[in-house]
Image 1 (cartoon, one colour):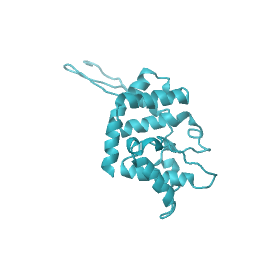
Image 2 (cartoon, one colour):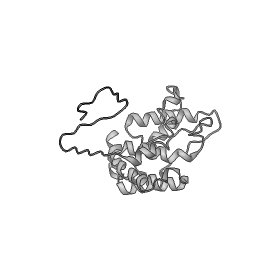
Image 3 (tube, one colour):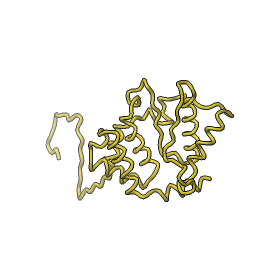
Image 4 (spheres, helix red, strand yellow):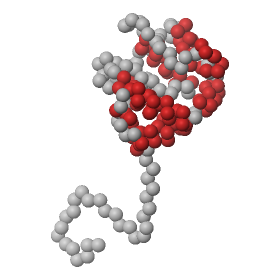
Length: 196
């Protein structure tokens, strides 16, 4: 390549010497990579930024933790109309909501039933409002359920503005539509019933 060359220096180059054909097939989930940059990694139940997390002391909060675990592990069809898909935990400041939610999230993670978590915090700009809520949940769900990866990735690839759109649009585009397309309801029910 450099026949009869002398007295020169090449710095910082990348060299490839290919004698025959070179075929590279790179499969990259560009949508999921883009989505990652619009999430709040410090909002996850096991985030290093939240260490040590608030937890319920052993033997405390048994009634509410039992109620939450029962709610999470009973299927929609078995519960009938009484079961709501979202559970709201509320109370005054300092009542222990974060400790209860953390303990519950850890329990679900240990049982293999946690799809995602988001812990709000007033002092953290990535989690003191809902702008990153659905992007963070969508990415966690795509990681937890293989069947969702392609549909969430496609949602962001087809609409690169989805992660920065309104929270209503994010919920629809990144969670509801991919969930419906992936048809993971039965797989999730099977996973939950196997853990019992």
